[in-house]
Image (cartoon, rainbow, N blue to C red):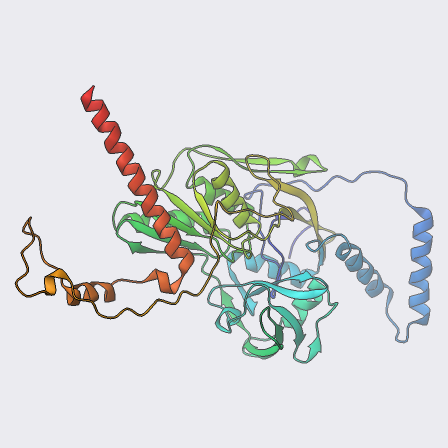
Length: 449
C-alpha cells in the first residue's frame, strides 16, 4: 500500500501484461508532490459533464453507482492525454512495484497501442511470450476469441492477467504473413534476469541488459568484474535490443559505468521538480575498452538514455536499427491511500540536447537483423595437404584442411546465430586493431625523437 506522501517518477516504454515496467528517478530520495495551483474552473464544461453524468446515471441500461462512474471518468481523462498516462488502483500500484524488482505474474510481453490496435513492443527474455516466438510489431487481434481492437491499454493488460498456469490464446497478425495465426501461452511467474554476460572471443565480451530494474546498475558492475576476471577486455558489446526501459536511476548508473565524467541525461517539465539532471562520476569500469551498443525498434526509454548518452560522448559506436522513441517521464501521484494516477510530467534529453520523443536514437551504423545462410563450400586441399610440401619457413606448426575444420567446429559461430552481434564483434576488433597500430606508431615516433 502507498501513502499520499509517496511520489514516484517512471520512464518505461509502454505497458506490460502485469503492468508498466518503469522506475524510480529520485534514487530513493523524498520527492515533493506537484504543487496545486489555483485557476478558474471551466464552469460551462463542468455543467456539460454533470449533464452527461446524470444522463448515464439515470438512463443507462444497467444501474452503475456514482463512484464507479467517476472512476471511469478519471480513467478516460488520463487515457485521452497520451499512451503512458493512466489511473492506478491498489492492485495496479502493487504490480508496478513488483515489476521494478523484476518479478511478476503474467506473459512477459510489453504492449502499446498503434492505429487503435494492441501491438507487441517487445517480448521479455525467457518468458512465455518469448518462448512462444512473439515478436516486436506483432498485432494482437483477439484474446481467447474476444476482439482487442479499440481496447484501452489498461483493459488489455487486465484481460491478459490470470492465475499462474492458466492458458490464453492470442490471435496474431504479423507483417509478411498472409493470414493471422493463433498462439497459446500459459501464464507464469516471470522472473526477469536483467543482466548477463559472456566471453565471445579472447578479450571480447558480450553484456545483455534486458530491462532496467532497481539493481541493474550494480548488476552491470558485478558482471563486468566477472568478465574481467577471465582476461583484460579488448572490447565490449552492450546489447539493449528489445529493452523496454525501466528505472531511470539505473540507466544513469549503467551509462556512468562507461563514462569518466559528463552529463548523462536531463529532464524538462512544467514544474520545478520535473527539471532534473544526472551526471557521471569518475571511473570507467572497462578502463576505456571500445564499446558497441546494439539497439533496435524494441529499445525504449531508459535503454535510449544509455545509448544516447554513450553516443553523444562518443564513448560507443551505436549499431542496429532505429530505437522506439519513448522520451517522456511519468510521475505516480497518490490521490488517497487506495488510488493514484501515473501522469506524464516531463521529457528527457540526451547530453547534446536531443529529444528522443517520437523520434528515437539513430544508430551510427545501421545493421538489420537478418538470417544468414552460409554458402556450402566443398572441402578444399591446402598446401599442407600436398605430398612433398615444404615446411613452414619459421618452423611453425602446419595446419591442413582437417585441422582447420576442427578449429572451426570448436568455435562459436556468431555469424549464423546473430548477424548483428557478429558485425558488432568485427567493429570492436577493427577499433582495437586501429588503436594498437596507432599506439605503435606513436611509440616509433617518440623513440625516433
